[in-house]
Image (cartoon, rainbow, N blue to C red; front, side, top):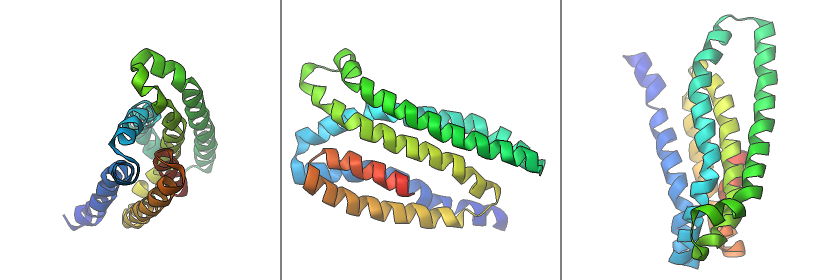
Length: 189
């Protein structure tokens, strides 16, 4: 029971930080720029979040395989895991860039003319989600080592950075600043 508490309780702020980070950009856009821009940002987030959806789904399938390989305690397997991790970083970053490049085309198919401006957010959101996907790959080692208390510190620091970055980037760049801040935050985390 105590082991479960020590493992699980630090994940509560970790989970809450993820929810908080989703809304901080929208809040500042609404307060600083306006509600219409918050709507455009939200639409851009929906498309850019495709990368996050793929990363999350992949991670769900990857973790059991990874833990099984880590349990073998083989240096050769660990080397392969590290090499695969770097390959994954490259693939998910390229996927984000491709999605960003296709965003105007996708917006033409999915949303009305009045929402086309939301395409500028997609590249930043997609890149942010690719950094978050890279985080998923690394955080699995933290889970395996059962050092979840470290995650709370990292994600709470990331949330604080996201607030600071969002506030200033939106002041400097308008609504696109929220997407840039989110991307930078996930890169730092």
